[in-house]
Length: 205
Ligand code: B4P
Image (cartoon, rainbow, N blue to C red; front, top):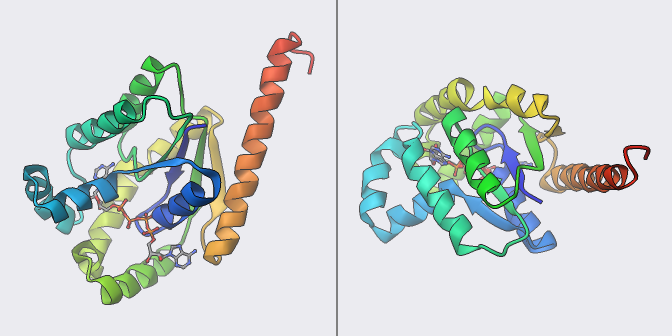
């Protein structure tokens, strides 16, 4: 199963993706983590993206698409992935569809974590105090929210139209959000099985 964890910055995508890896054996592809790793390693890519990330803007589509394609090539035999923080723009979503189609795969489920802006700000303020992540300061965070609303949120109706979108309340505790995601995934795999049976039985199931 290929799953997208979708939501504004600090909605809990990374938190939930890591749990799904531990509990269900998914492979997590987080473009945010990849970019931060490049920065920590001081690579040429890391140096190129540092200022953009610290300003709260999105890095270029070309860069993140290449990062994702490299990872898909690396894990050729994986049964599925969690895309965490990717896609974040329409061109990224189109590139993902194309690259998955080449592998005879598609996006099966998009889970949107809904968290209100005040709670998001509380979370990043706490993380800024604890970890000092430059893009978590309140001014930069506002720009990240603006980028989400302008460039990422427009993907929601696209996935809704394809009947891939499930909304999850991301305001509860980490455990409560996890339980809701698990329920959504169980329903999704049930629906997939039903669809498969229905095809097998000529659409009568
Ligand atoms: P990300 O790394 O994706 O952003 P994030 O803030 O870490 O979001 P996430 O939703 O994963 O939050 P988390 O679980 O950590 O992106 C960072 C930057 O990289 C972007 O601004 C951009 O510049 C660049 N970038 C990345 N991908 C890109 C792309 N595809 N295209 C272009 N640019 C890209 O949770 C946040 C905090 O909340 C944590 O401290 C956590 O402990 C806490 N928390 C989580 N769930 C909670 C809950 N239920 N209750 C209370 N606290 C909770």
